[in-house]
Image 1: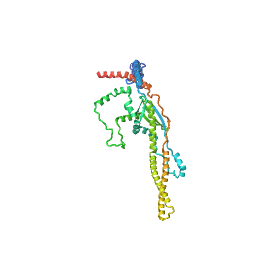
Image 2: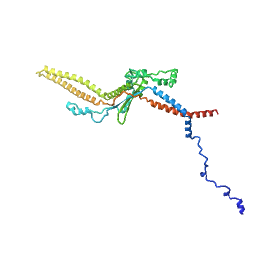
Image 3: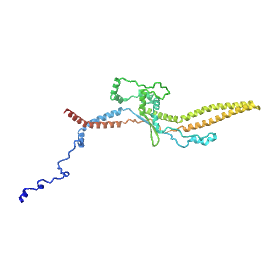
Image 4: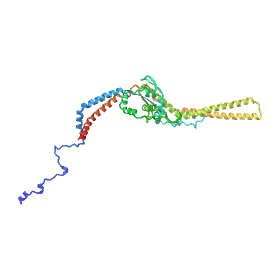
Length: 397
């Protein structure tokens, strides 16, 4: 029995005990197997280091091109001026207050006078500067350009006098070459630039293609912005000529303030003109009635007849009517003048226009951009070329 037990091992002796699957032992030399889709950063760094001479060459070429582009880029001068507009308040202004205090001495009532005016919101100032009518007025205004020593309108400058420079010429005959070729091959369709039957009083603007292009150019070079916290309006002009940039800025400020003043005072000035015309007519009528009454009294002294008394009463009534009308229109005329004074806005220039000295074209920024683009492009080329070769090989197989 003892021998049988020794010769016949138990099931536990026949098979070793299996470890739970979650506790399997991994050999020390097994190592970590990288997934094929994972990127080995160390391998990437080695590849870039091995190709460092190629990258340096491309970066050097990019730096050289950046210097050339920076030197050949047209100069741009920026002129800026800040304007603080008048904000309406609920209280009466100086003219209305004066009218309320001393109007009674002159027989003028200030109770109906209202100082609140329909002013244009300050946040609409940039829209006014960008409007087509405003840009057309700027486009037709002559300015002195010191770089070419001549006086010309902005339209003439951008269509005839201003050259695109070397870069513009290169871009026109490289990037823009396909468009020029297609434009010469394909038939051109003439677009109508005017509305049939439109008159000078029409609201439709008839712009030529050149005018449309110049207006779009000016919109990118002449702008106004509002600081919402302080309420200050800034007008900025960027042009290739520093003297012209300052002159256009000053003209834009002046035209903007005149436009806003005209808008604010248009109705009160129209009312003032109407009252002034009526006052002139009433004055003639009053003087005529006064003279007729005086002549009648001089020629009928001592005449106590009923007819004479009736005529005198009639002339005196006409005189009183003319006097009351003249006196009332005189009061309205004084009120209208005070209202014009009160309605006229006041603008304060915080930062006057200055002729810019420094060129806004940043050569250093152009150089940095070219260096970065050439560096990124060369590194991308290093990794893209093997992929292209691998893809070509797979296609051949």
